[in-house]
Length: 146
Image 1 (cartoon, rainbow, N blue to C red):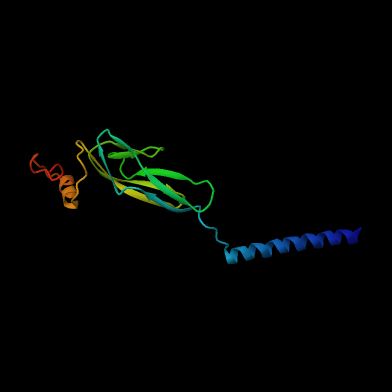
Image 2 (image 1 turned 30 degrees about the vertical axis):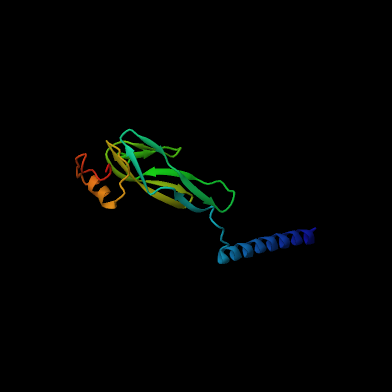
């Protein structure tokens, strides 16, 4: 009976020792798992919205596997624009902000310009800067409507 008990204790110690060696091996070699998300990409660089307007954000998520992902949307300044859980951007007040889409540890952002009056997007970068800084144009001078 005592011999049987000694064998059980020995086998238990042996199993515990094998588990400890396995844990040490894993922690030393740090078996790395690929993240679920490889890339998040918003399809546009800028969104132009009127105050009170809205637009569905178009984005792409490239996954490494079929695992579930945690998707979130965020506005840098919710006083200017917000984004809801469905990816719809809402213009709140005049200004510029950034909208972020994140999936697991990857994210992307785009600029949002909210104004009282929406005109076609300017083709020249300096025109946009002038409009944001408050430069006004007559209808004849307006580079966007020319």
